[in-house]
Length: 350
Image (cartoon, rainbow, N blue to C red; front, side):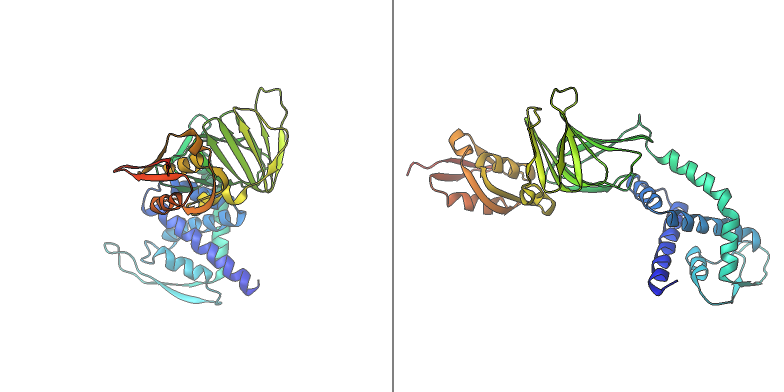
């Protein structure tokens, strides 16, 4: 085994020990359970290392009474490449005093783990199945006004939500479904040929195998932007067929109607929210103002339909309303009135 492989294996063993200690010392949160399951399922080596740690912890107390050696120290000994070491096992207070000296080698540790592996694996796999949300018990992920969130889903996929967004996740042994109830999501999908990954956003249905894409559900329309890989966008029960969308392409469905072909992606605009920014290229002022209102308590009010259609371009910090207001004051024919709880944008008479 090369030095780099040894370092990787050592890191995996340490992670396995950390997870095992976490399970033994406190209840895990829903997010931690999802992260642990994703880590387990991402590689058979992770399962092997975790089960090896579990086997050692189960067997050693029977072999040496109640050892006063912390689990992290046991893990360090298991990784030790020396041919032999002498370990003193001291019983905990309340037990008969004794000192047991045992020669411990890496081969012995591996043999102990292998003997217990078959016994532990069935219990562990049963536990994994029981902790996965059943199809009739969906998980809900959501963000509040102005906040964003990132989660690792049980299959290892990564989900990010923009401000004021909510999704309902339903995973089963046959399918993975994410329903975008409102707002905007970005997802990097873990490949699973046996379980298609679908996003439902209003009338739009997006299916991917292993890819990265963004879905923005707006009032009256849904925008799908593909960053890597490809997806299939369709409208169930509609006459139009499915549309295949590749990397750096986008599809916008208006009132549930699928366009004839994908368009080049406005990648910088679609993903600016991942950096908490708003980027626009000749976009109507009313739409950009609505984007700012998604993140801030101080709103931009534009009642004039002509002003709402005014095309503007720029890159802005999504939380910096003062800078956006200052930019609007530079536009010809635009006046900004500062109210206690809002910016009112009106046509200039001068």
